[in-house]
Image (cartoon, rainbow, N blue to C red; front, side, top):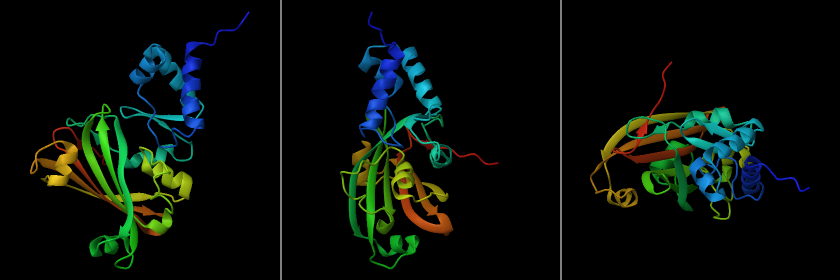
Length: 238
């Protein structure tokens, strides 16, 4: 008699295949539970059981309110310190990020000074857009990296996961140790307004981040702009 595979194991196999095939890499959000349930024609309870098992196996990491990520035990807890976005009411929210641009180019005098490299140094510029519910753009990130520390990342063949720092740690063995952030607000410029589907001049939340690796070395300068009506930034002071 042929043994029938439990439905939750079918879901597990589907997710594991996405990971093992390279379609999802450490730091990537997996499809949401409703999406998986619809794709595989199973209940959300079945999907939850499958995900629980893979979390227990350390293949996945569930971040309450933000979604479930492909993960490894050596970085999942520490890197989520740098991921504190929410919705307009400050509630945790699942934001999927898509890399829209990446290019090597000389940094501006200001950016080079912030990265503590000579003026005109060729840097890696990455632009990413964050979406809620896979369709509403709520934020855009503009980040500059010291290109020599992440060689090849300008190539589109290298997939950048939702949690970029996971790739930096996993592929480049570059630890992310801390970040300094400044939160402000401003009127939206035309280019950003087009991406976020709002009118130019509309208020946006602006988060400026300086990211450090071991030895207190600056590795990234990032500016995140988010829709004030759909995006918030939350931190905890102890």
